[in-house]
Length: 498
Image (cartoon, rainbow, N blue to C red):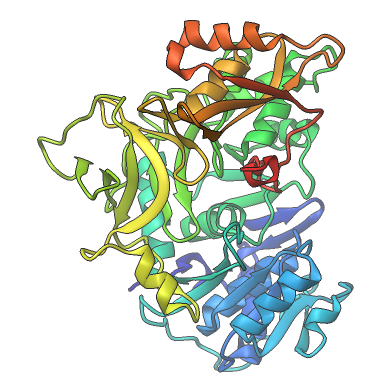
């Protein structure tokens, strides 16, 4: 395997090295990042695993890059994680030390670990002769903990080849080069913000500008000053759409978004309404991709493809994808020339196989075995359809978004999009709940535009029936002030009682 971060090789000592990362006024060139990470890598070489207190700072980038160079698996920690969950992660991953910024105040759960402060402000002092051989492709690079919606978080062990495979597949799909300047404000403890948002540019030899805290003004400023790509989650694009529609739109925001080479949304489905609002204001469509912690990237709309709201594009190069019925019947296999049905209607679970997959859950051989089929496909738990042109359309999670009502299999996502198309609906989520007659009835959770005069239950049911089909109309509507969301903008449906 070639170097995971080839742009850092030989960068040490250069004074003309281009910008690698920027956080506000703090810039690290490739030469500075190479020296700082090499110095830290020499100090942690031989450690079993290291935890990284993953704040949105240059220090986190230095820490993760140092771990990758030293061949030491890094465990990114979310600084907002509660004490109980953090204690579980530390006990499960058993890091030998924690890497943190000098000014970071660490919680008690990390108190037993050796602490190593990361200084990204000054030039690194490289240990003479500290050359780091490239570890094997299957050696672990990161251990990223899942959200734990069905129990304590599990640590997904991501090998170096999975990171390289996904980033190289995106290079092909998005025509990603070293000339690209990526703008984002994503947290650095998960796949989207850290692997795609930081390691992606560094693998290409490009640069990343991190906003620290998301704002429409920040997006406009960085895109207008050389940014070529924007990565975000649906909440961010929803706010951009609102800013574009509002009377106090940031100066140049529409021009900035229109001028970007790629606007990419991920981590959850972007509602069709927000797609349409952004496209109408800028002439630029937002493209979506589909991945998860255990698989990294599976599909993506190509840079030379057609953005289509509600779809996440075809499988990426090297990824085998199929849809499977509950009884194991393969509904669709994208690797077959005569793949069928490809009708945009037949719903099955997405299963994937390829070099992008994790190697397993740390300390959980039982969970690892249950996650894979006998022929090596990973069971994603996501339900999808495939359009005639091969574009995948995710309809929701098997556990919470596939509703079986009156003999029909119904995806929550399309009903949510239909509800969002109603002028009286600001936010919407759809779940199923037990029903003696139907098996499950469709429940809509709605945040109205006007809390004092929300659209009626019958009005919303008729609206969905007219747009989709009568059997997809909600039988119950519950009104909320706000939908519960996590940091990535995903609606936490289990908090709604499902």
